[in-house]
Length: 118
Image (cartoon, rainbow, N blue to C red; front, side, top):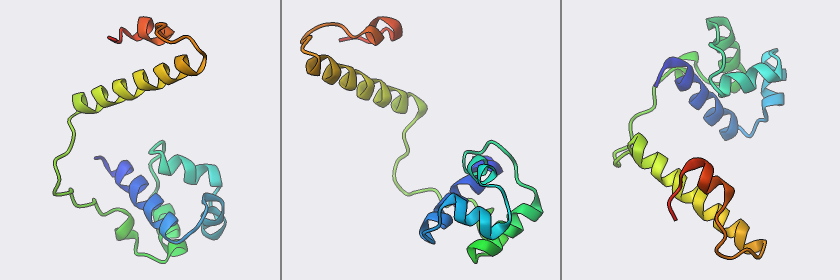
């Protein structure tokens, strides 16, 4: 996890814990709302002054926003396991769509495009 992602995760977590919207946080910190959104999506790297303004607006230390979260004790999924899970969820979604449309066993267009197995 790079430092942008660390800031993004911590910023969103603290903002939501305080019950603030992105707009309210932006107003308190004197920053544009779209910039807050971009920071939470790891699009931009924030300067140290911006990190300090955000920390003050949230009532935490700047270091708290840049501290890497501790790894969970549980087993983490590999990239392949995550991809397989997403593929299963996508297939299940298309099957529900087809059933809702009354097409029963029809093959979803995505099955041909993405090469899903039935």
